[in-house]
Image: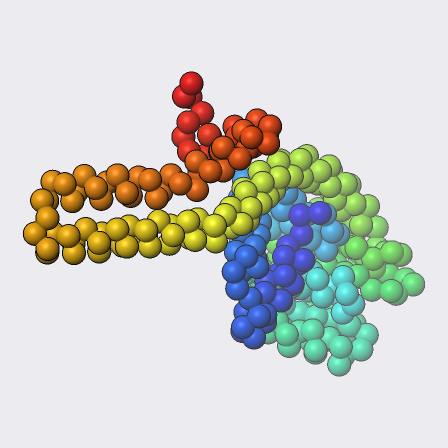
Length: 310
């Protein structure tokens, strides 16, 4: 709930369809309305403001602790789907210094290369750990990869500048005892799950606001769509009126050219124009009255602006 991936897929499909010339009219209007409503929902509600995935929660935590991720070095341990999501979130929020450690170096290189990072093997972590301000780990290893002694050594090399360590692996990748160190701030998947659950509840509340906006905008779009049904009728009605006007005007001009009295010509023009324009509505009202159709007669009176007349 509240994640933008589906909207991104819709936008991509819209772009492809538009490039192929497959959109137009109401469909084009529908997509533009959809994108505008999505933007309004994300602007006016907090539906996308809280992390509801462990990967996003880990990144949110890092952003809360560090003023700017662009100045922080992040060590990602693992190269699976979760770490890939973490890397993507970090990159979107300005993280420029990324180190990816993985058992399979080729996989680490592929992920690091996508975000301009550096790839290392798991055995090289002790050599690079002191460079990391942030460590986020998610592997399938059966035993911890990062121990208390390794972190102690790294902290000493860092002159005890604080480190944030986020362990989102089950079982743990980082020894529990690391949390006992003064300058090491360790968060586990359980800590993040608590954040995620609280945020899910916040998004549910925001979703109520979002549904109100969507319902309001949907009603407006359907009203516009229904109005299209009248367009052809209005166009035809105007064309018929223009035809009658042009015909009678031409006849009046001929009379003037023949020397007829201008006042009499104008009077006759106005009389004939009135009779021609009210002929069809008059017949329709007479027919409705004759057939005993008061509802139909009432609609015609309203259309002709007679609803307040007696």
